[in-house]
Image (tube, rainbow, N blue to C red; front, side, top):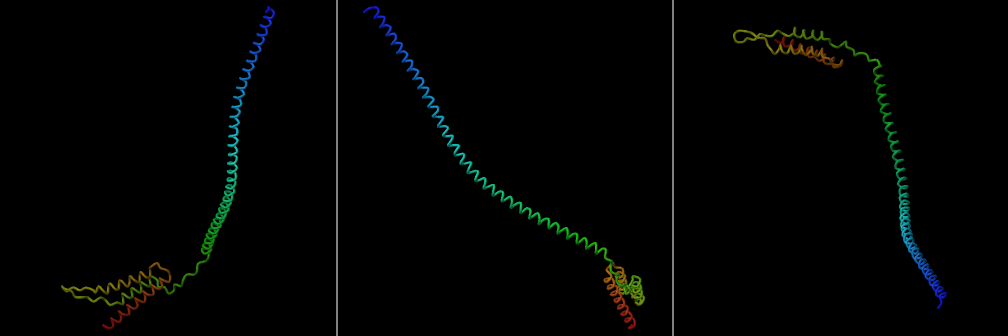
Length: 217
């Protein structure tokens, strides 16, 4: 084998070795890229799963929000109707209260007007007092009764002394006081007249009885 052939074969071997190294490097590069691709695939697959789960959650949330919205709309309608009814009832009660206050004011004004009319109305003439006995007349009647009454008989007691009858003196004083009180008592006109007349009749009756008793003696 010549030197030329040996060199040529060495060159071919070196060239083949370089090509093999290059091929191995390409395989290593492809392996690295495949690994990177696999990692990316795993990451993107997980992201897709997470996105799908989030989408499902959002869909459920949307359904829940839709149900809540429908429920809130119904509740709002009921609350609005209830508020309108309460407002109407409050207005009706306020109107009744206003009418009651107005009626009370009218009643009070009517009473005041009647009181003013009664105060402005002239008072009726005083009752006839011609036949009413005056205090002086009553006193005179009492004096006449005392004058007509017989003097008290002296009663003989032990020791030769005499004493007047206390019963007659007491009756005379009571009759006079009764007539005076009847004449001066602050009662209405009719009551004063009736009392005075009664006292006068009592005095007249008692005077007549005393006179009869005195004559009988």
